[in-house]
Length: 346
Length: 287
Image (cartoon, rainbow over all chains, first blue to last red; front, side, top):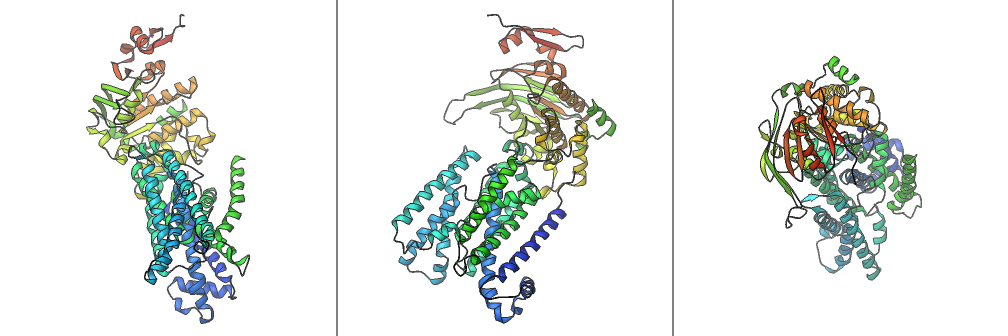
């Protein structure tokens, strides 16, 4: 009998953080301008301890302004999706749940497409224009979350099967609207939407959006992590959790809203990158077990690592042209998922 | 009964149980009505029901299907709010307690738990420490000791490192009981705990429960269909039919042939055995 301790969680997270650091350094190296790995590692530590000005000037601009922000976006998008998927799997008591299962991504897509369509027709300040599409996406995601939440309630309580079905139906309905919009609108106004629908990190984020994504991630992660031991019990069922002292209703609402917000944030800036939120939780569960106090941070690091690697591949395999990162995660993810499934059956 | 010997030898009685000396559950004129929709007439009504469970005592709720046994259990567990009357555990109304406090005082043993992801037996038993934990609930050394003791008390110490889905039904039921003991409750509720067990495992389970009830001074309320096992192990029985509690008393006073035949709608024979416990046999149905 060796129960999980805070120390064990810290050590394992430390190891994952080192792996993430190495992945980031390697990801920074790939690109048109060659940079030495050693120099990068040294400079990145400089950035981490707050001395970014010391990066040598020849490639400092490329690192600071282009590659690092994109990698940072990949880290937070990946971590958000993976933590959201891990949370939904417990909340819905369904190992097949992923961040998109409740229709949030389709809601965000509809919002973003509508924003893209109306953006040229209204006058707005440039700082608002820069965040207009992601804002549309986030509003779409939020509305979907609220509608699904309302539909998924039965006698004032969340009923996880009703919630799941409402989410799936909402997703289908919104998917139909997306297809309709793409077909009806002139191709000039929907350029980039198809790439965005697959998930894409190539559009640079304005700093304010990067700040929102980062802060949103940490706040939502903290909220979910505080319920980690409750989620362990929810896996056994709502009644059992209640008899073991879990305030089931409160935990469900907190986790539902926080996990939806994580999904909404990630999808608004990067489109729906598939498989990360489904697979990373399962891979981490195989490695670290299913105790959510370990699994949630592991999923955050795992998601970050997976998306940074996938995005690096998306940038480089067909260089100079870029693939959508979602295509890479799907191509690697689908066979991996089948492998895990077969392994489980065996 | 290695379980009992273990518990006596180890004296691993959870701390909380020593404070149970005068714990008592009082169900006072409790009624309830269930309707699938607030605007519809109730489809099930529980009429005013009263009984008590003292510490060190097993009370069994008996009755045919849809007699209201499970409703009584849910009301006592605080999962439902009574329409009238009150349910007091040591003076506190159970449905008014917060989830955490309630789980410190009341433990529920249900039929097999469905696990979404595999868990080890020790992980499962440690879940019983959840209501006592601080934020994030990382288990302490004392939690581990209590969980080990609980497993020892039900004779399942050797199962500790096995997976929950790789042990037998009887073993699983003992592990679920161990998790309830790890909660260090005053009141132990059991919902048909012997349903999927063979006769040997049923007797084993109830024998262990009886010893622990006396040793740890739990107040125990058990819902069951097993008339003979209840007759053998319960101190009091509550006989229910169609939402009414017909009779409350010792098994030998409640197990009257006419009454049981009327409640269960079948012909049967009731014998009083030398140990003062009744035995019920069902007669072949005459066409």
